[in-house]
Image (cartoon, rainbow, N blue to C red; front, side, top):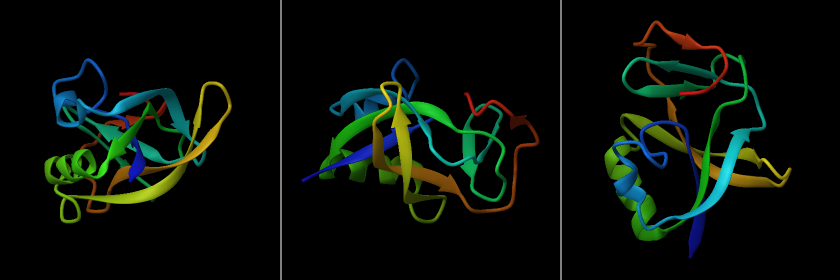
Length: 117
């Protein structure tokens, strides 16, 4: 079984934690259909509490083991919470993908108004 995973921070290709999903198949750049808010310092997080902009990231196909690795890294469900959301690739295709959300008090004061990390 495979799932789709949308990543927006340090799990993206070329970032320091990408090896946690290294076996994933890259589908392409994508962004969320709905507007959300991204806050970041050294590490970004996304919240649904505010509707600021689409979140930009990368879409991957992952197997169960890779998704489990990502869950461990992200501390799902205690630190980040993985939920399904709609994302759109650059070619216009819409996919349902897992995305890690921050559902705690805001800890970084820097809002990324463009949704890009």
